[in-house]
Amino acid sequence: VYTAYLFHRMGNNSFDFHQDVMKSIALFNRCLTTRPSRRQCYFDTNLLEELKVEIPFMCYAVYIKEWLDVFPRKHFMFMKTERYSQEMESHLFKIFDFLNMSRPSSALFQQMLAFPKSYHTKVKDKAGPMLPETRAVLRKYAESCNQELADLLHDDAYLWKDELPPRSEGSQMVHNVISGHKSSANLPLASS
Image (cartoon, rainbow, N blue to C red):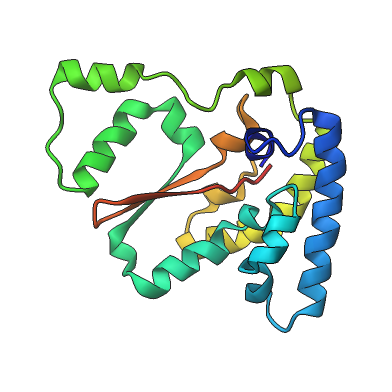
């Protein structure tokens, strides 16, 4: 969420981000307590535009359930971006296999591995790291959503209990969802 906040130029430093996190959580919680269903809040485009921090997108399970209501589970491959970043080679091979694609030549594969990381930006460098107190608030806020995701995917790794977020807080927490229909979607969500 921090990376998205900076990318969309909602603010330009960690102090503004902290204030906007607190305001966005309060606004989103108000919706959750006044609407008959949480879905109305998660898909309210007016509310989403009003939030400076994309708090709803932290709850991956809400959006993944929408996909799973339409497409069979076997058509999706879920992976954590942190793991992908640390083990790109093995994860790319898993993706090729999942999509029934032939593996690229060794030379092309090495080029793929060498692509620059797009989550590293000058704006983020200038803004500095997320404040520890902001990280704590976001972690606490995301706990129930992470539990829901872990239950949905039958994988406790999505609780993010034993992991510290990598250097690029927001973008590293993005889940990559790859459909068996050879399309892909990124859910811009974060647990911290």
